[in-house]
Length: 280
Ligand SMILES: Cc1cc2nc3c(=O)[nH]c(=O)nc-3n(C[C@H](O)[C@H](O)[C@H](O)COP(=O)(O)OP(=O)(O)OC[C@H]3O[C@@H](n4cnc5c(N)ncnc54)[C@H](O)[C@@H]3O)c2cc1C
Image (tube, rainbow, N blue to C red):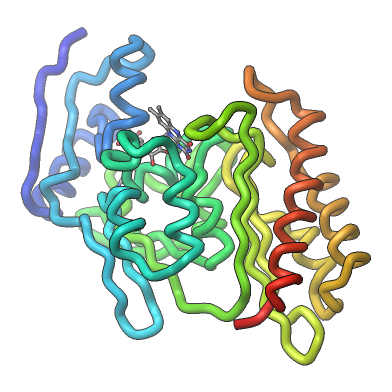
């Protein structure tokens, strides 16, 4: 099968007219670093392709207490233009520089397991995904955007923006790979912990390599609530993280090994924020 139509809309309205008209028969390409290898290796045979890059959704804007990332912002642009350390760190660990120059923040939300190294950081920052169709605009917490291997988005919709609130807390980000990076993760862990009056006020712990998509490890978060961020609490949270994970197995690592490493890396990451004081 050959590509019959290649669209490069220059406005969001035009793009959403095309998604409304063609729905799932339209292959959406942002940076193309997932889509194009799949096409080149013969896994997908799109007949209609739409390129999102001319839409002007490549922006990093601080607006009050919210950071707005346009969906087609590349990971290299995040490194250059965002002032959120956790996001810059996550972008640096997603692929090599050639990939980061093309790969987009919107596209990373669709990465298959065990990928999604940027999205893991977004989960700990309580990011929201803005989704548009021709007739509707809605916002979904990123944690609710993932539905197993699917995403909470219809065929006539596009992700247009990711919104990141300014939140308290110390953060840490760790990616564990079999080979020297750039390499796919065995596990990636991001944490954000806010400590007030000596106890944990808010904890976010997220990982990939822990499920079919980047996921918040809520059992581990609950262990920390109202606890002192000491060795005992960290160990119990790490155990809860490992126990609640449902890791994929692939050529990179077995389910058993990933589960062990989730515990280890949650412990390491929480140790880092504990040393840093856990509050800003
Ligand atoms: C060599 C190599 C190394 C990599 N290493 C890593 C890594 O270490 N960590 C990691 O997480 N990923 C990695 N990736 C995967 C990929 O590069 C990233 O996940 C990237 O962020 C995907 O973004 P993209 O814009 O290229 O996606 P695309 O390929 O453009 O799109 C992927 C999918 O998302 C959908 N989509 C994209 N944008 C939108 C939107 N705005 N609205 C609706 N649907 C949309 C498309 O329909 C498509 O199905 C790697 C890829 C390669 C080729």
